[in-house]
Image 1 (cartoon, rainbow, N blue to C red):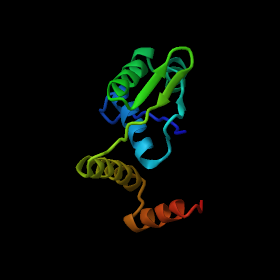
Image 2: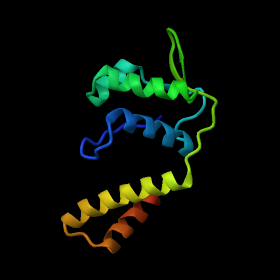
Image 3: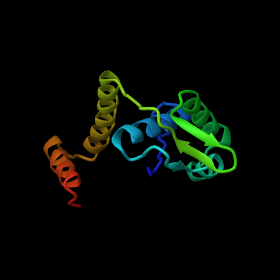
Length: 126
């Protein structure tokens, strides 16, 4: 399961952020085939967004066969393989890093301090 987080400052519509997080979650192995997602209502409440926002994201992923909705039981990760093009993946990483660097630098942190901390996080040390 993944923890959904929306960034109102990113300029990316919330439904698109939900779609991207599900797609990246599948590629990363955080979401697996057959895994149940929160209901539209539950996710909308959790993220504090309109039901239609979550519904739109789920519907778009259903059209792409990434998700399957079974009446009365819920929404599940479908068996379709999700591929993210290297260019899209690279652009997403650049965007994340730029945002991270901007925030950290505004607090006076240097790049080498950030790299050290990222390595600690990656290694499971906090």
